[in-house]
Image (cartoon, rainbow, N blue to C red; front, side, top):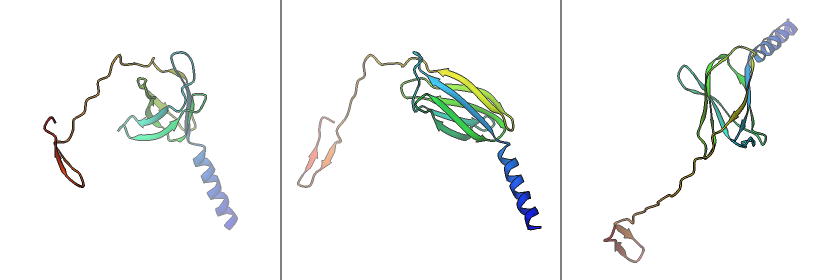
Length: 135
């Protein structure tokens, strides 16, 4: 009887593991070079809750495994580039979805940036109190 119970639990565990889906893809910039260490997040389409987050490797490839069946959307982010969003992803049990290659738009650069700062009106130092009248 013990052997039957052990086999039953092992088969149940194996069957549960085989019913997970996976997603893979590759990220590139506008020049075709791999985008390294971009964040790729998978969200549930029903309530926009975060399902999984991965990072692209040195070849720009990302892989998400052990996903439950359902409807999702994918969002890839990289510093200096506009986000990439892929809506309408439907995963079935055991499905292995290959999204192919995604290309980020060219980086948007500012021509000029102006940085401003203000001093605190009152500065308390160990030996004195300083009042800044210019702000």
